[in-house]
Length: 426
Length: 192
Image (tube, rainbow over all chains, first blue to last red; front, top):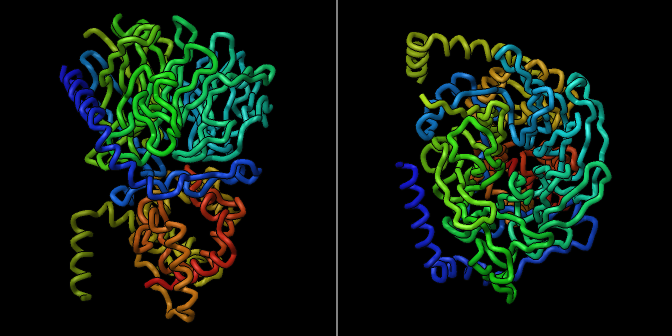
């Protein structure tokens, strides 16, 4: 119940901030106005190989100077540290968290093989892991090395698919070849090669096509026309279509089991203020919808510089504003039978947490209760406790996957671990 | 001075024997490093960086990158392949605790002045901190060997080295001219 109240309070606080948007955000944005409109020349090949060097810094105000991405423990958390971390995680009654596997450094998106192998991507290290269960003991094996930010994975028809910035690579018959997956086959590569917001996530739809996000290589600007979008790609043929526009940095999504529509998380622009704008949960109703970036944020906040005459009403609003700088990444519809019945088809979102907010927020799992139409969403905190002090992390959840028994697994790229959260009535 | 230090040392020996033993063990292991990186982590060898006083996390990350193969170096690779996570933590703790090298007498203050402007223009201090002592995963630049800084920036510029997860160094260095690299390296190497 405490969870409900604190979320309610923060929603109220957010609403109050939103009411003040005309004043507080206005002030924050006015500082930008004295500078010329940021412009990038994307018409050259060089832009795509070497994006602007001020892509994540450069828009900050004087008060925001010194806020840089935090870096976790390079070798992850030790087993002793993990044992103490899981004790600090708060869950609703009846739920339990334990360490599923450790030493999974920089762990990102997870995918199940048909024979029970858990594949895990990673961020900067270039590794893909395979985790096997040997009579309860988890064996973590690095099965691919040296890839370019292989954050996104999928498993389909016996093949492991890895998205490494500008290459979608297929490794056939993967579970039988864990000792040597080989070079794989690139099945789609019509993608820019920059790393900035170039790391990706894979959501597979009912027809077996992959939804892939294309972030712009900077905080805010007029995006080159082939990015700030979500594409739908057929891994069999390499055919692709542009499915959504006006999307900033999305690294998480899932297909609604009820409707087949893609829902996705989106990280909002930086450097307006600690409380604006909110990160979003979106749903795509129709092909070609525009979600507002860079013109409009959180469904109701026109960008002071980049709105360029557009109104927020021109764009698809978010299903839900999740809060500022919470960094929602991987998400899943809960389709299992282990959790209480009211969790069925709820959305669980892993929030990675802030890097440039003075007091971090996020680093938790939220539960969103919403129908297939996206109307009247409610959110509450499901799992929290990875934050320590104003700018400290014990861990950073970034992806969720359901296990066969209806429990969920959570990837943490800070502690280099996979957790298991399960429910039992007693 | 000497007695004070001795007093602390014996207290450590008395109350934290395990840690003292670890320190001795890591010192022994670090002897391998001193062949190239110098006694006490201060390099006397061209194109080999000093490690003394580098931030703990930065040192650990580089070892993890070498081990994963995302940072490539023929000398380092066989050494790090044998390292456990615990070794990496211990090396980070050990070299970060050593006194960092001091910049030499600046033989070309005009070049340093130019280098300071480059550093300001490229916003180096945003991550490397105002004193360029580095922090967490970000390297100390102050007092590093000048020709090594030039080499590192060229490695980033050429895409041979990527840096941390967000690739900031590769993006920054790519846009730097050779003149800028020369000047900023001189400035940083001579910082006191």
